Length: 383
Image 1 (tube, rainbow, N blue to C red):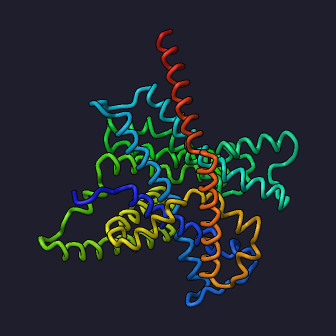
Image 2: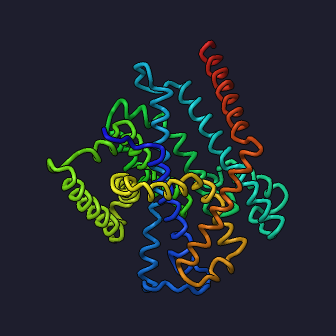
Image 3: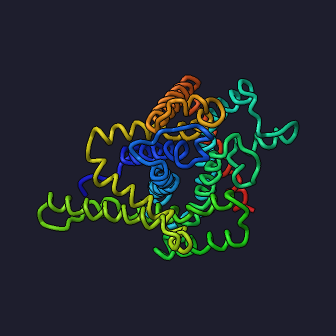
């Protein structure tokens, strides 16, 4: 293989996803403009809404990349020396450590945004007294999207889905190792059954819509599919082959975006298109954009701070400065302001983490979590 799907490729894909996220949250519908006037020239407003609404594939991109990266970790740390599946102890250690890492990454932006919102802007969706404390704990631990409790901002529902991905990884990996591609079947069937029986609004749908990205991420990571697809040639001439692949892949990507907008697709292929389209776009980035050093470096820079941008950007737009966000009057002005402020906040947050050595503390908690799980599992086995 010429070049693997590296950490920088992952960061570049995350960078593209966070750019899409800003466009989607700020400019994808009339309701998101919150009554403010925005000029979308040279696009008509309805055409702009259509374009920016399509950018919600960013959620599937983040979910797929999470599963992809977790599978790489599992293969490296837990499935070496001929082991073909995760045992109960390894699964428990994996879930404990990844959960601690996830909540640890979320904690500082959570504290910053919550304190500013409560103390400076008197914004309190949590309620009072005991209810306030309960909602705050659930939100801080990423459980609000699962339990249906109040969140500081609704975009934090993704923390719950990230926990779902972590929890489902061990069993999905074991199913994949045993049954191969058949692991896709339950992820196509169960979300539909769950939604039909328990659907109560967006909360359940958010926990099921992108579940298919979990086995897809596992399969792509385990089989090096991105690399194999990229290195496969159509003709003997390498350059002509790249051009032909670009035309075919771009047409396929455009067709997938078109298909996603069709009502029959939304009715019958809802879960498939929501998860497959982001994978196609990530491959397109890897195959054709990430080979351009300048573009790759710019996207990777945004990707490096994508988590904190995600955690914090909604407060700028929705809670703290909606009037300032939309005062720029044009779609590109709104985007540049939001991206600039969110990126600046993310950089400061990252510096604060380093200043207080937060990552070392989270690493310490992760090690203690492993020790505790090892103790519990060993004691259980001995009994």
